[in-house]
Length: 68
Image (cartoon, rainbow, N blue to C red; front, top):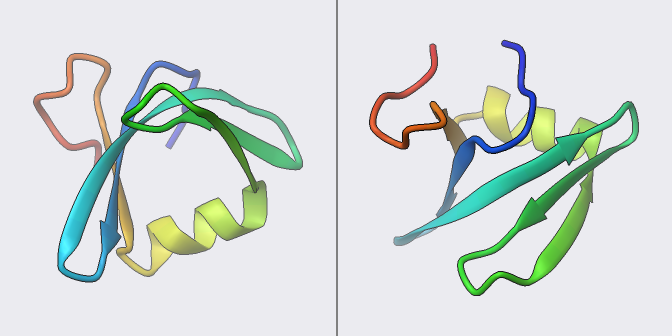
């Protein structure tokens, strides 16, 4: 999966789902904006682990279809 920024990430937080906007990915950090527009960062490896374990999903830039 190739991500360029602008994609919507759905994080599963137990009984709640939140949508964050991907800003940029580099080799060590994933840069994102939360629902309130606040800038956040997380280690790249942690982000990939969330995706692999199904705790996060990536939507296409239009926000309608999931990326497989």
